[in-house]
Length: 145
Image (cartoon, rainbow, N blue to C red; front, side, top):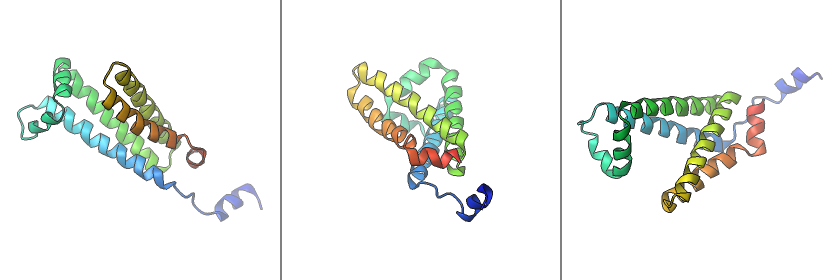
């Protein structure tokens, strides 16, 4: 039996279940980034009450001006692409997701080191867990095919 026939006889690759969780997190992040960007571009809507959940983030974004909204739309596009790529089993989706989580973990490490221990630790635990999961051998093998 040649290599091609052996691959066909084994059927489709089984997507690791955790990939769905990571992708769902990415899609949720997409929604939050796009909503936040829209709230910055068009203030005074009925969604402004959401800023009370993180007033310091609002203050920081406002000082950046419209650039913050553009940045958030870029983040939303990147997280959407990564989540979609993960769901489609694409290697580029896995690479993009790993890069996004690595940047996120680095940011949370800085946040932790600067004294924001609770948010930094929470981010390190969540982002680190996703990153470590994506780097597990069976997950990498799924995306290598």
